[in-house]
Length: 91
Image (tube, rainbow, N blue to C red; front, side, top):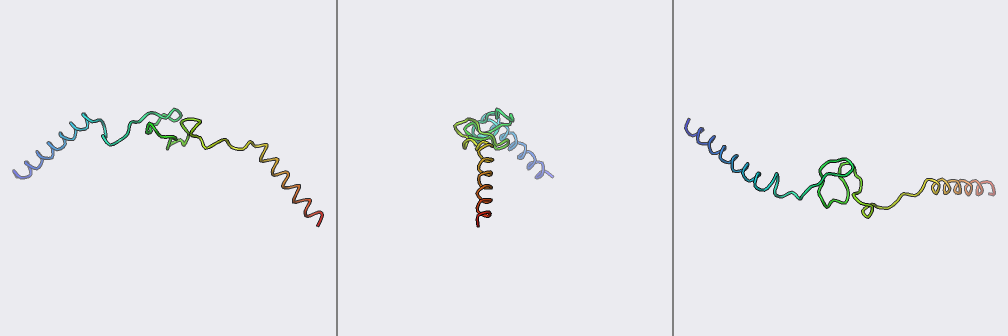
């Protein structure tokens, strides 16, 4: 009976030591500093170029680049359609 009481006391002391370490060093001393994402407001690593939750870039410099405008894609498809029609009508 005394052995289990001693073991419980040892576990309580270990938990107290861990709580002291957590209070002294923050929640997790190995983690980098975090900031809220400006878009979804979730905590992310401060130097992250992109939010892992909403997948938006933090700055325009980090962004992969602009997408092609819709009119460019539609013009290319129309030209391709005309070229295919011309090939089949001539041959």
